[in-house]
Length: 237
Image (cartoon, rainbow, N blue to C red):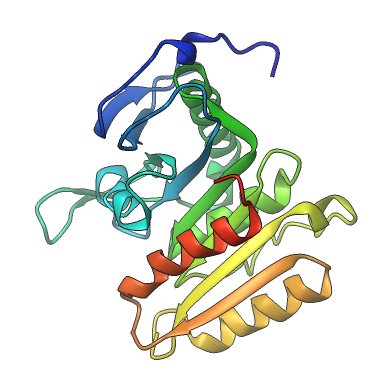
């Protein structure tokens, strides 16, 4: 994108977690994971992690090195509604209702732009990875911006049931989707994920679904399969 600077050409971060903020209109947190052996000449895929109800950007981004320590730059974002202190003693957040969407859109796109200023990101390899409530947001943003988002990764979540975004054909057919769901999930029943799969498949998306022996908790194989799914579709990863 022409308006981005090229500071990533000399930036060589060590592997680990970093904290920054969006620039405008109001500073919002961006938690970043830089991969081991970061090479500024290589255009990395970007994983944007969106936490579940009661989670936060710090907690959800801990999944990034479990997907791969080497293959991706990753960021975690924070929902706009504070729910207070969770069971682990840290602040928990929600993505709120539809009234929050304009602000969330600006936050998401601004965070991606800010990350691309500092890291060499492949413009066609940007994935939204959401857990629970965050998966619903990932679906919504991916379907709203199929020209900016390469794929949606929905882990134990579902598509929006209210104010559902339109499947804008043929633009949306460029979107890829990975659905990972627990077969004993009582929070988001497996039947909802299966319905989402059928809807996306009938709309012409490249969609893949995996079932796991778990409840609403993430299964360790989900993250392994996410890495494998991206690699098999984008061979330059």
